[in-house]
Structures are given as C-alpha cells and as structure tokens.
Image (cartoon, rainbow, N blue to C red; front, side, top):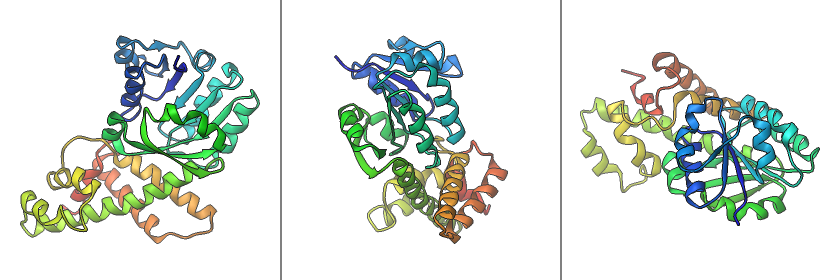
Length: 284
C-alpha cells in the first residue's frame, strides 16, 4: 500500500503536485492557513488536517513547498510536537541553505529524517510530473524516497549534504534570471524595431536564442500580458537568497546586484505579484 503523505503548500506549484499524488492513489492529508485552498483536494479525496501537529502525526512522508525561508521554519516548528519516528520530511521550497541544518536537527531529535529537494520545471512541469528535484541531505533517505518522488518529477539529482539542494536551486535561479533579463531586453529591442511576434518566433525559435523560457515567455513578453506563473516578487526573493549565499561564499556578483536592482524597479512599477513577463515593459 502506498505511504500516507502529508502536504503543506497549495500555491501555483504545490496544488498540481498534490493532485498528482491523489491521482496516483496516495492517501493524502493536507493543511493550509487558508482552508479554502484545500476545497478542490477534499473533493478529490484528500483528508484535511486541523493543524500542523495532526498533519505531522499522520504522514509517513511529509512534503512542504512554501513561499520563503521564514515559512519553512514556521511550518516545521508547528509540526514539531507531532513528528513521529522514521517519518521522512521533504522540503521543496526555494529557501536559504542554512535553514537545512536547523530543520535536520529539529526532526532528528524525533528520530525522523529530512532532505531539501527544491524543484525546477515550472507550473507546467508540476502538472505534467516532469520536474527536476535538487536534493541535499542523506543519500540513503533519497534512495528511500525516489519511487515516491518519481510521481512528481522525472529526475532527482543528488547534490550533496544537507543544504546542497537549496544551493543548487540558487544556481539555477541565477542562470534563469540572466535568461529572463536577456529575453526581456531582446523583446524590447524587437518591439522598438517594429518586429512582430510571428517574425521574432520564426527567426529565433530554431537558433541559439531559443529554449524553454523563450518558448514559454516570448509571446507574454511581447504583449506584456498572459498567465502569471512566476512573479516578479518570487524571482526577486530567489535572487536575494542567491546574493546572500554568494556573500557567504565571499564571492561578489555584479550580475546579481544588477538583477536585484532590475527586480526592485519592476516590483515598484508593476507590483511584486505581476508576472516576470513585465520585465520587458520596464523601458516603456
């Protein structure tokens, strides 16, 4: 029989991931600060925990995918009284790497296990089950969970000891920030040159400028509209974490400084809940 799963985090990524587990036949217990977020899962058969202690008590594997580092620490402190021995906790948040040691110690005090396993692949990947997990922690714990994680993603890459998954995610976010900013500037130049989307796509989608983010965002950036699947505020949060990690590693990053400045300007102009496609509108 599949393990009983506890789940916290029902945002743009977390909800479709939780739905995949229900569809795969896993008994699922969920908790959310806003009970309305749980309604669709309840209709599909999920059990709703009254609090975090109950959730931790019921799950054999507990997954969290939250907004930021503060949320991670708050949720794990809330679960602490209910933690059962041998439970595996998996955090998929993009968070500060230093939090991993604190959460590992918290759950280890109850003879439980923790791995940090943030994901990449976007909302579409969450729905399709094609995410990649960057995993830090005990490799034996990952081996124990690999079959479970295969329901959510196509790859789980072991990156090293506790916190290494978080660090790899910050590497990933630094790189995609460069792509987002370059794409935004390129689209702005195309617009100023009176090139329409059809021409830009025909010219670029088979060349070196093409790729997953080009295919997903070129139209949205050209129009300055479309679905919001990744916000300016979330990208800024991720880059601030990357900047802090670079400073801890005694590495100065001119790019991260520039990128955070761009995101600050974009958040002030369009609001942190606007999609990253609005980066292409900064110079209008």
